[in-house]
Amino acid sequence: MGIPEEVRAVARRALALPDDAFLAECEETFFVAGGPGGQHRNKTESGVRLLHRPTGILVTATERRSQLQNRTAALERLRERLARLAHRPAPRRPTRPGRGAKERRLADKRRRAERKAGRRGWE
Image (tube, rainbow, N blue to C red; front, top):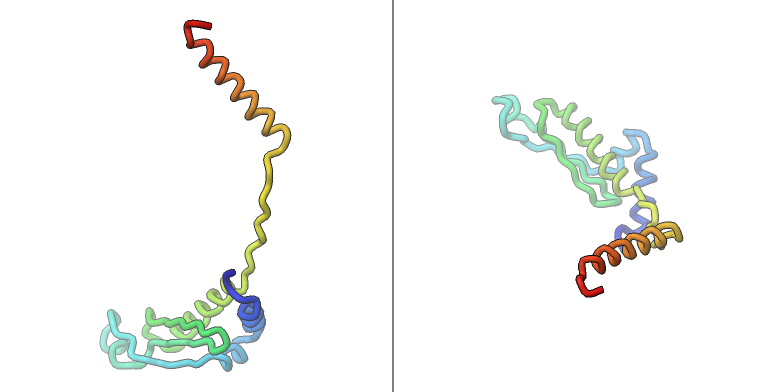
């Protein structure tokens, strides 16, 4: 059901690492980003792609003309994705209505039934 606990544990461990050790676990590639930004952006490899090898999560950043700024943005995105992966939602437990709720519901049903019965002309 859902994400295996081992993957969550790997994500939690990776989030605790400092940036340099965290980057050592990643495969970093640079590419020509393209798009608006002029000649500088279209001719340089300013796009950054980070692959976190242990979990297989891949993120890219191409919105800046600077490779360093894109690298920082990709690192932030990767940490956010790992944080979402590491989060374990609280287990949901089925509940039943309490005694007061049951009594209110039954009283409302009784009032409705009496109102409908009053509409009938033969009683």
